[in-house]
Length: 98
Length: 473
Image (cartoon, rainbow over all chains, first blue to last red; front, side, top):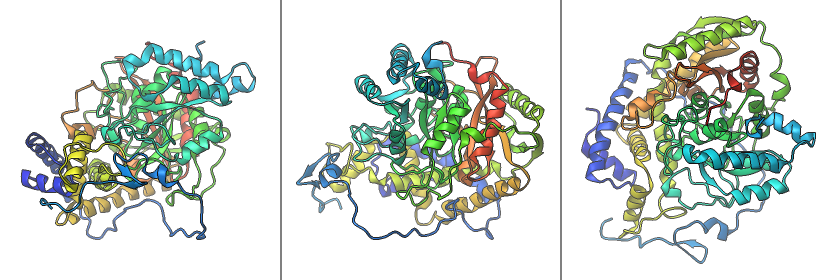
């Protein structure tokens, strides 16, 4: 097995996704199967290769530091599920669960 | 002839000659939508009144947009519950470019949630159906755009392609789909799935329309630092040149065991047609093709897991109501808001990037990506274009693959490599199976050489009749 239930549960927590027991069971089997397939990459010798994270030859882009019109604050927050005074409103951050 | 069957270039010339008004075209689409949308479900957001109002004010062609491309103040939800009600405060660059051409924005098309899928079955709004057989999937993830164009609900549409999401549904719905070179079209305002792979592109009824729409949306954009500062040629006039003496490679890895025999026969027949038009077709090899799906589902999910971290119940969309704390809000919002495939991919991608697994999965996949890109670099030293099937099979049945993600992933086997290598690809209709399901021919080209693949596709199309066939609905 490439992955077990504990690792899926741990990883889901890293990704901040709550999983039901049923989801955990279901996803563990499926993700294990996918990772099993991905293991075919181990048949290749890649030690001498450079990774390709991007296909374009990228260079740093500079621009003049000038003030331009931007999105008004009220537009930027208008989609928030909870807001106050043009700010995003969230539940209290310090809690007993951490 | 019914207006909804005409191509964009035919309609544009009727508009120029003043034989038609934009509202006539809009009405023909609306009539068609009234007649067939209930059985196809190609549209995610459509406001008839707004569409009519716009077509009275603007002297351009109507267009539908995939639901992951931002249109200011209009629903843009990636067909996901987590973006319920989201109206972006700005428009994507491609939308601004279309607006400059007086395009009539008609609405949004259905898609796999966050473009995660090959069948449009993972949409929060339910599956889209293939206009050629309503029991079958239209492909994905731009299945709504492809089905809408195929069914005559849309004149043309925009899609996005991260692993085949324009070309595969175009192939399975019998229309033309083009994925431009990475960097050819600005991604500003495209809600990111995998930032090193995503490209916006046209889904159209024929190749000339594809060239027209690419010309409108392509070009450098200061708002996307990965968009390339390379001139955009006048595709429509250039693609009409013949293909005599053009060197075309046929990679043996794209004719695999288990592929549909009607698909194989149609593609081999298409290659003969290209030869009869003067192209020099020759067998070749892209030896690392078999690793593409494995590389893709590590790289794409890793990038997705990072990009989708922003959906946390704070800035937009859904927030769970059953929350006790901040962390709880993130976790419950994401549990309720994302569908199964999104959760699976985020967890898989997070795993591939996590401490202890990064080198074994993510880094290794990036290194094999180098091999896949080199295969193409080598092949394009010898060939002007590469021709393959778009998909190994025609459209499958709704529900057939949804419970087995790996089998679903393998349906993208012929389209994924182009995204990993950053090269352009187009799917053009090349026949039908015995069950009357469309088959797509894929033409791949050198980076920023969309002109050549459009030219091959145009020459093929103009010497065949496949693109004139319409589904009976």
